[in-house]
Length: 193
Image 1 (cartoon, rainbow, N blue to C red):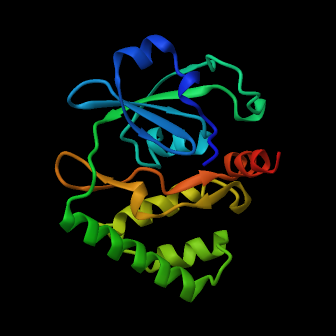
Image 2: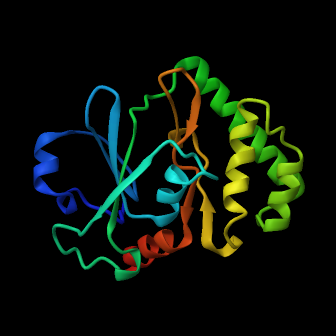
């Protein structure tokens, strides 16, 4: 899998001090302590989803770092965002079932009102069918609120079971439901080289 971020780009003193607990195409996650994780992200949309008030808002955008080694990464993707967030865990069997139902519900609504192409108009139609006060449906409602801040050509959905974790109270957390088009294009174009 191609990535927008590599382990060797993370400051060595951080890599040596903290346990690596997760990797994805646009992020690397370390455990800081028993309650806290540190995520290094190279996708501005994911950074905003985790930290901004209209998104998930569980993370605190701490600072940015320059990559430690040059992998000839695109300047357009910029520096690495460093985000502190609560330590999340893999889904319990009960929450895995709930997350699958949530994804199925979303995909069913999406296919009925949108077909293949998801537009702003389509997002509004989906959102009108969701209850913002009913858990876990409210997670999707807030995701759409977040996406409505962007043009439809700036993001791709990535709503999959692997992108949902749970917090210490057992609540579902959409950790990575969307990726910026810029990051996807960079990965895709890099694969062609």
